[in-house]
Amino acid sequence: MSIRDHPIIDSHIHLWPASAADQDGHAWMSDPDFVLSKQHILSDYTAASSSNSPASVVYVETDRRLQDPSSSALETWAAEAIKELQFLRSIVEGDYGTEASNLLQGIVSWAPVHQGPEVFSQWLDMAEQTTGTETWKRVKGFRFLLQAITDKTEFENLVLSDDFIAILKSFSSRTNKFSFDVGIDQQSGGVWQLEVFTKVLEKLYNNVAQDERTVLVLNHMCKPAYTSESPDSFSQWRNCMQNFASYPRVYLKLSGAFSELSKDDSPVDSADAKELAKRIEPWTDVVFDAFGPQRLMFGSDWPVCNVKGPEGEGSWPVWTSVVEEVLNQRNCSEEEKQRVWNGTAKEVYRM
Image (cartoon, rainbow, N blue to C red):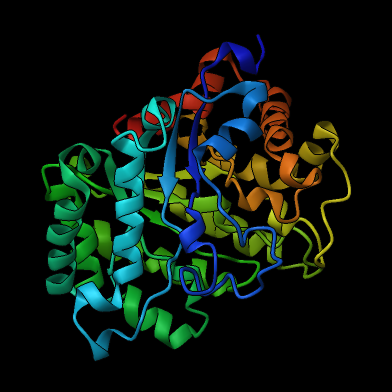
């Protein structure tokens, strides 16, 4: 059986309208000629993924520009994040067509987990009011991009704080039982981000019953340093993965490799799925051995996969073929393949 025999849930895509495709909407879009500095909406995604049209997708927040939280009210300093929710509501309510509304079945929204429980609670109320009933039902979890915090002390002061842990713990006690997507990065942030986050799991799960633990979803295999020449780089990353996997409520996305596989700004130098799967095999072996297919899920990271992808804006089917090749190299059963292509995401995001 091939990939076409398993409906795909793409667990990690990003979207933004033309009105947010600049540095006013996203601080990281400082270059107007950057491939991502233009509109990316679901019709663009469906064109890019037409070779194996996904059954549904999970939208993940796009790190909208924030103002200084100390200088104004939440609705002002997080105005772009509110616009992001309004954009998602317009999709769900049909402004971009019925197909787009039906495709967008899961949302991982931004949330100010760095500002303490009171602000987080205010944000939940504001977000629910902004999205409306139907869109709010599709909000399955939250993300705050931790990888952007590159100062170790600042990172530790946030993620090991009682407030941060309390907010994450609250996710599992709410009616919606939200999950948290974890964006940490060995390649750019440093392996210390991963090592510090292992301490977060200890604090988050200590003395908490298994079925009451908040679900965490590790993005992009924590962006391994695929091209590092350091002899310790791989073993340090592997140790962290094994530590994360020792907690049954932690899941991981097979995604994000193209942006990390080149040493410079040039595209990945091959579009051959077998070759690429072989190149990342040491890392995929670690996560399959540690998490098993039951806790792994496919994610394309579209349109970021195009940035250094081997086929530019046609890189979605290449990554899909790479994941298919990895599953074949691992001799996965059809049931295990089904978990990776859709079952894990469906379970984690309650779709």
